[in-house]
Structures are given as structure tokens and as C-alpha cells.
Image 1 (cartoon, rainbow, N blue to C red):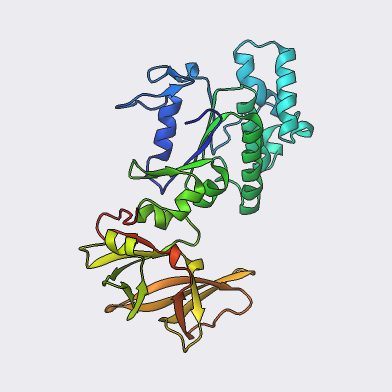
Image 2: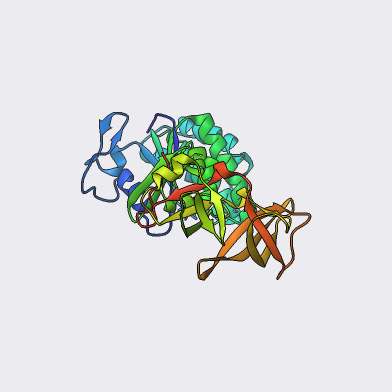
Length: 336
């Protein structure tokens, strides 16, 4: 990691995100490899000697202490004098908009305010690294979006190297300078949010990153292109060469790269099964026949004129540069 970077670890439950973070914190043993902070090997250094500050999802505030006492407690244990503690706590409280709550106890605060206190407690320690383990999962949706923006802005301002764990890929994409995608304890891809979205390394990353998820279907392939519902979707020469020797490929296309076309044009026949109206746009879920099976596709359309349930529509690829091909067995990306 670069100094001052905001790296997000993301993946489904059980993928190893929190275990990796606990290893960095010194709370789990490392089987192989080494952990370095600031160029110093800390693999066998106890947690208190690693110069890290951890923010948990459970806040872990002392209920009998005020906000100011909670924020300054770690400094008090270090023997820092009261004047310096007060100055650092007040500075952090100002950053987090907590100044008027410094004399309150945690029970008198909302969930979002408690989370900011937990952040403040980490900030006053001025660590080399912040480790954050799903710190927003206990907040409601609106507050989560607001606090997400606050944390990203704060990290930018402080310039402290931060490793942030979440299962929420939207959170990962909007906060991280780089995002590391994990599955079953293995790193699948680590890249910028844009690169993960545009060039996923495998079918797992393609299906995990993006909301709604990419449409991923295993389809027959011919010398001209991919065959969907009797329609040949043209593929580039590079893509066809990469898929050379395969009878089938995993074909990936994001909902916004599909569109509903007039009945006279070529496209896949789709029966509308669900319409999610989101205001500016709508997500249309429907069944398309591929081979002998019916497969579900999602198409993003204009929210003002969505089709109705049960309607038969034609769907076509609007942007052929947005097609992704993966190996049907390994899931690895086929194009260079």
C-alpha cells in the first residue's frame, strides 16, 4: 500500500476480510508472509506496539464516561498530560462536529454520533494506520451514506493510511482509492473502482462489483459471436481469438449496456417479470430463452416510460464495447 492510501477490502461473508484486518492489528496469528508498517516488520509485534487505531462496527464506547473522556482515554493511559489531551480531543471533536456533545454520555447520542465518537477516539491517537471493520453497518441507510462521505473526506484531510472492511460493494466503490476483492480467503483483484468496474479480472468480480449486478450467462459461441435467443451478438476479433477452441463462454453485460428496441429490430425476446421504478431510471427484470432454458436478464431503462409486467419486449446490446467474456469453467477473463 502507498502511504496515505484508502484501501477497501470487500467480499461476501466468510471471504476473509475481517480475518485479514485482525492479522494487521495483531489479533490473529499470521501463517506465512510478513506485515510491514512504515517499513518496519511488525509481524510478531503485539497490537499495542503497531501504532494502529481500530474502529469497530460495535462502537465499543465506555457507557460511564463522557464523549470527551472516551475520546481521550487511550491518551490518558499513555500518560499524556491533561492539557494536551484536552487540545487533541477538542480538535478531533471540531472535525467531527461533536463539540457540543463532549460532556454527554454515549446513551444520550444517536447511532451516527456514537460512530463519530469512535472515529474521534481513533483520530486523537494520531496512528500510522486506521483499521476500520464495517464501521457503518449499524447505521440506517441515509446516515450510512452521509457518514460514508464524512469518513472519506476526513481520511483525505488527515492523510492517514486506512484499511476499511465492508461487505457493501457500493460503499467500497465510493470510498476507496483502491478496492481489494476477496473470495474464500483469496485475493481476486485489487484495483481502482473504475478499473474493477470496466475490466473485472474474472466472473466473480464482474458479478460482485456493480449495482445491479452484471448479467452473466453461459452461452454458445460461433465464429461470428455469442448466441443469445437465436440472435448472434457480434464480438471483436480479439474476443473471438481469446475464446478460440471454446464452444461456450460466460457472456457478461451490464444492465445499462442493454436496451429495449422497437419490435421490428433484431433483439432477444424478453417477457417482463418485474419492474423496479427508481425515479430517473427503472430496472426491468425478465426471462430470455437461451438454449432450452429460460434465463433472467436485467435491463436499465428510462424511468418515465418503463414496460409493464407480462409485456413482451425486444432487448439488444446498445454498446458492444461493454461486453465481457469469461472462461465458462475457470471464470477468468478471456480478453486481454
